[in-house]
Length: 205
Image 1 (cartoon, helix red, strand yellow):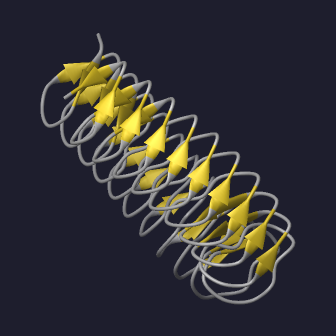
Image 2 (image 1 turned 90 degrees about the vertical axis):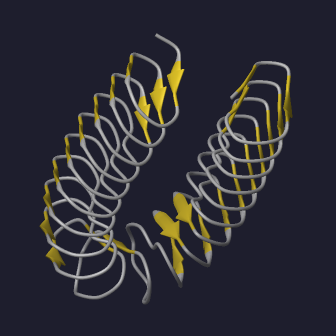
């Protein structure tokens, strides 16, 4: 009921494979967050079907990052009414290429979400400054995925009070590296949960 990192079924957090109601990072089926593959009602990052967020591939009503069809957010490819990150046509968010009234992730300026480059009031994923969500680099009050400083969620690097996935300092969740009071998955120091490396007052995996 706690956290699973590679395989299994957990109500907490899954990082690589399995079925979890919490967070999945690589593969599996979860109602929480999926990062790579699987089916989740929460967040998917790489592949799968999720009503939450998909990052790489799959079909989700939430957010897709790489490929698939989602009513939420797509990051790489597909058609979504929500957010697209790489390619496609979406009324929501586009991250790499395309025309969107919502969010742009890689290039351009959008009133919605930008993931890679530019300045947006919505979400930025790679570079720039946004009040929404940043995924790769920049400073955002929302969510950062790769680098930057955000009060929301950081995935790769930066400082965030929300969730960090790769590197940085966050009071929320860190997945790869950094310092967080929430959850760390790969490296860093956290008062919450550490999954790979680091020192934490919570749980070390």
